[in-house]
Length: 327
Ligand code: NAD
Image (cartoon, rainbow, N blue to C red; front, side, top):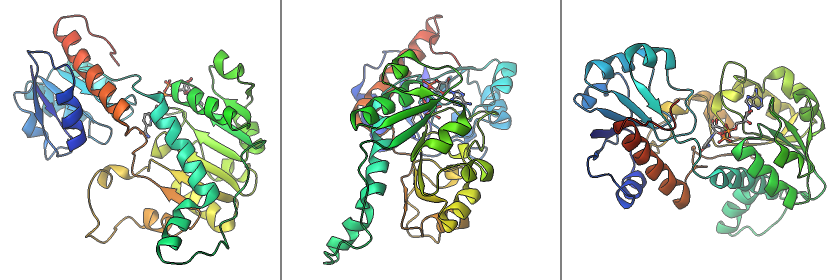
């Protein structure tokens, strides 16, 4: 099967070539993002392998189907970027990697918390500049703090376990509570209550019509003044302009983002020579109490290896008539 991997970076090539590649799968690595402008590159490719910022809306899917593509193999767990009704109508099957390393994402959420709390991002620059003063760097002990986990699936549960290890009190919101999270001592409460009682809130739910802008002006006003918000889920879980106003007023005390609603045009590319055109992101980057990473929470050796192997197994399973991990 001719397989075209859009948005593939050097680390994708390395992990796929190190995996167990079935003999009938022919891999072609394409660094370009899948868009209407690049979709023609997939002509005659039976399988298109896509990542989170590839455009899998109806017009692109129609063009893919017309060019002979039959399977969309996502290298991600999230599938909010795929127009599933259109894929179904066009006879395109979609598979994903439901789990690769919940630890990778959960540990990155913790890294954001630690960096924000202890101001590591500021201290790093300060000491490199020969300034060894400590003013403005006061943090807080994590032990005893209340942490709200929104979405307690694989990543949220792993995150909860780590925070329990710090001695934090855990609150959780999820329409499907998990026994293993309750076993950590977490209390499931309505979302408003979790937001109101937590000093740190971390988002681990999928993006869908119920969760888009879950964190908005109203929910921000219901949080504790000076709370910390961490989003490693999807950018559109939060209303970004509302976050900026909350940061300006001090209502939000710390913000750690690994995802951004408008990231598709920016992330995974070196744009350091160019003026930043996104004024919302530019404003966010001016706050000393904001740390932003460019959708790197998944990026560990273990996760990359698991993404590559599961994707290849998904393609092989589909080709042999026993598809697995269908969306
Ligand atoms: P999962 O399916 O195991 O868990 C998702 C949980 O969210 C489930 O328990 C579900 O019941 C819950 N949920 C659904 N609707 C909810 C709502 N309205 N409010 C609260 N909870 C809700 O998924 P996962 O593997 O834990 O991944 C979670 C999300 O993390 C993914 O959907 C993806 O968007 C994101 N993610 C980000 C990265 C990254 O690199 N930043 C990597 C992987 C996944």
